[in-house]
Image (tube, rainbow, N blue to C red; front, top):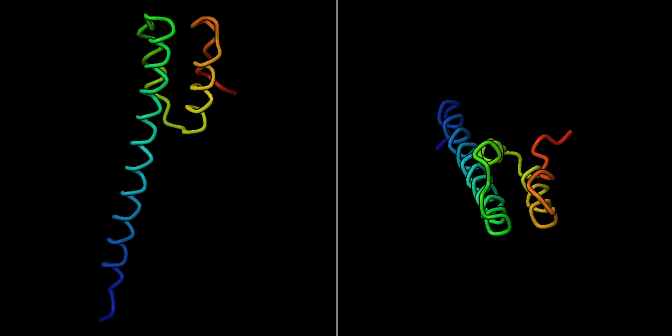
Length: 83
C-alpha cells in the first residue's frame, strides 16, 4: 500500500520529534552532571551560574563545561559564554 504525502510528512515529524526529544534529554543529563560535580567540589553554586548552565543545550558546550568543572580551582573560572 502506497503512503500518501501527508502520511509521509507525519512520520517524518514523529521521527524528528523523537530525535529532538532524545537530544534534549541528553542535554538535561549533562546539565545535571555539571551542576552535581560543581556542588560536590564547591558546595554552593550561585543561582545565576546554575541558571546559565541550565540554559545551555548544546552538547559540545556542555561537555566543555563538564571538563571545566573537573579541573577549575574556583567557580570564577567556569566560562559559560564560550566564543
